[in-house]
Every structure is written in C-alpha cells, then in structure tokens.
Image (cartoon, rainbow, N blue to C red; front, side, top):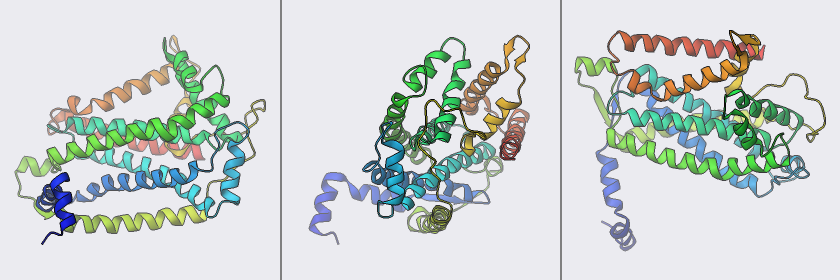
Length: 353
C-alpha cells in the first residue's frame, strides 16, 4: 500500500516503473559471473572519489604558494584529513584497476560482440578519462616528485608529429610546468574530467540495461540454457558483500599505507632520482626506457608514442575487428590479450625492481 508521499513522487518521477524493471531484471549465472561484480566496483570507487574529493577541495589551495602547504595542513591539522586524503588516493588506484580488469575480462570473454560494440567503446573512453584523472591528480600535492613526473609525462606527447608540441603546451598551459599547469590540472581534475566520467558512466549503464548482460561465447554457441537469478534483491545483496570486502581492503590500505608528502616543489631544482609515474603507467614508462634512441629513420620515443596511439585506436575498435570471435581470428585476438597482460605485468615488475 503506497503512502501519500510515495504516490505523489511516483506520479511525477515514475518510480514504480523503475521498481518494476529492477524486480523483473535477471542476471545470468555461470563460471564467468564473477566479472559482473567489477562493474559495480567501479561505481563504488568513483562515488568514494567524489565524496572524498568534495571534502578535500574545501581545504586545498591550487596555487604555487599554497598547494603543498594546504595538503600538509589537511594531513596534520584537519580532523581526519589524513585518512580522507589516503582514501581518496587509494580509491583512485582501485577505480583504475577495476576499469582495467572490467575491460580485460570483457575482451577475454568476447562480451563486446554484436550488439554491444558501443558498450565496449564507452568503457574504453571511461578508462582514458580515469587515467587522465589519476594523472592530473598526481600533480596537485605539488612536491618535487609530482612536479618531475608531470614534466616527464607532459613531455611525451611532444614526440607526436604535427600536433605533439601543441598538446604539450595545452596540458602545461605554456612551455614548461608552472603555476599555470597546477591551476589547469586542478580544473581538469575537479570539474572537467568528472563531468565526462559521469556522462560515460550514464551512457555505459544505459547500454548495459538496453542490451542486457552478455553470455559466455561457449554457452551462446552451444545454445545452452543458462541459470538466471533476480537482480533485486539476490544479485544486489551479493554485490553488497563484495562492496564490504572491497571497503575493508581500501580502508586497511588507507590506514596503514597513507600516501607521503615531500617538501614543496622547486621549479629551479634538478629532478630527483628514481622518478616513476603511478603504477598504471609503469609498463609504458619502462617500454620507453628500453627503446633505442633511433629505430630506422625515426627517433625511438616518437615511434613508441605512435605505436601506443595505434594500439589505442585498435583497442577502441576491437569489437569491429574481432567480428568473428568463434573463428581463428577471434582466437588469435584472445591470445594477443593474454600476451599483452603478461607483457604489461613483466614491464611493471621490471620498472619497480
């Protein structure tokens, strides 16, 4: 029996339609069902990012004089400021990790096959903007390490023919990394990038609801009858268990391994030793390091950046390329995914060592 308020809201928002949809929606159950939970984990960590980001922005000052000092104040003077900053930092890494896992599991399961091509493409864009969010946030503490890493990171696009120099200047707000870069990165990090992530998540979720969750390729080929469970409340309760486990891991890491803060960056000081980007860029960083200065007629870094761009384009259009996933071409693409995973892990470990 609806109350007066429920009836009033339902008449204006159509809440009963949403409730009916959630009760009728089902989720396939099979040996690959575990990967379904990675999608909701992304939403969980993005929500944590937004909440903790709101808290931090009240005290952060995006200026040369105030950036490092304001972060130090958050960590030492603001009540629970250190744990809020630590949760924000760790949840960013968790979100990027789960976007990667979600995409790789989709690739290996061939879940991007027709008619879910646009679902995959929106997911690739989500990965790009998640990485950009992590990259722009890395500079905001404005210490020596973040300054030097940003100089290296923003200099990489310079190798791209024609547009490279413009991209580097656009990111930096000038020729070099300065206070203008800090202000620009702050704007990207707290407003522009989150807006795009919100839009992409909305499109991605809509496409999933429209097309439904995909079945494993083997089950589809054999036309097997797959067991299904109700989305509400069965699947949601299982998701909540996963969220609690992830929150426990997140807060444990945030408490025992909070991010450090070095002294304020000096624009005139030499780069410190051991500069490394965040973990999700390490395999690219190590790849650039091992390439020779010149390959054939091209500089090594230029060739590397061009190969990364081509790989990104192929990755985006993968559903159109892998249009016959059950045949030989599809199997080769699956093997390629496994090789790339092994390569990325090996390069990351090499860089850390």
